[in-house]
Length: 116
Image (cartoon, rainbow, N blue to C red; front, side, top):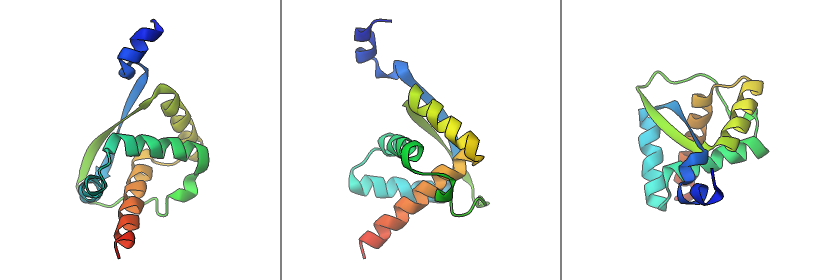
């Protein structure tokens, strides 16, 4: 595949994976993003990149998942990001859905405190 084709279609080098998130947390998260004028896919992609570079399993406060109804979320990232993220999460033996849900909870809490 030529370089020009990659520039025209950025999805060629993209991997998608799905996580299951609490519907309540997901709705609050989307609301906060809307208030800030941010896109869900960009924020989650940036979190994944930052997790690989700077964070570890201690980021997740509690590995227990809530019993609330879940919402499937599709996250697009580059193949390189996905491979690094999947390898790190596998080594740390952490549930990806819980990790993403923890990020959303932290994001919501941060913006709630910021407004006070």
